[in-house]
Length: 134
Image 1 (cartoon, helix red, strand yellow):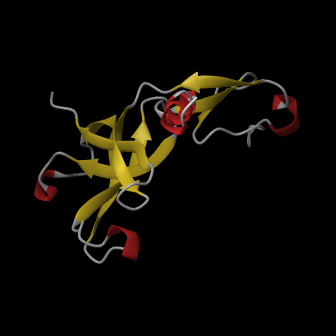
Image 2: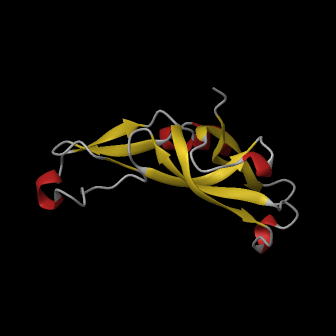
């Protein structure tokens, strides 16, 4: 099996897979092995949970001076997203004018290219968020 195929077949690579506590029902992302609320009672009771990918912008910032790996890609927006399932994620907002981003904006996850290792290296993909037009 080639390297690209190996990476594509890891389910969590292209899905938002979190964990749901079998005791209290809270959903976490990234996945956890123990629920911070139920603690020991949740051991062995955390189940995989695929998030729907939709949420609301709770806060955001515009990055104008990026880290070295992202030079040439600024300005861009990073937001704190409250997912419909109740957990929080951070992610880049894409496919919209930066002036249109606002607290309360509905968004959905999409998978996009993030970076690559040189001109002939592996290409890394991950989740970002785009506006959900109502």
